[in-house]
Length: 136
Image (cartoon, rainbow, N blue to C red; front, side, top):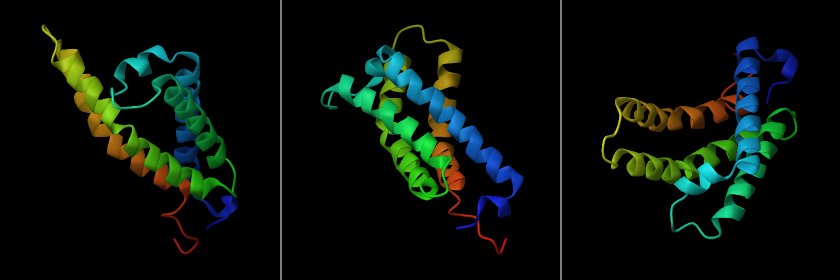
């Protein structure tokens, strides 16, 4: 894995953007769990604990991305995490879009949100540095 000195500036920007994203998301999960509880599928056991734990995982992943030692593991873990929360995002979309009088804005939001999930997974892997080598 390359050292930070050999990284291109765009890769640092990708990483720091993802760090900011997950610091905000993790803080939100812990400080304001109600919206996340509302979209948690019924089959998830102990949703309050799970939402709290996911917030901690997001914070830990963000911090891990900042360290050379844990960057790769943190990026991979955040990618797996982003894949694991997809059922909650699908439930949120189905619940919202099955209501009566759904706005166009709701449709746009959910289409974008679900479309972006694979990009978040890729973003986490990219931020981990696993696609970058010193050879270019």
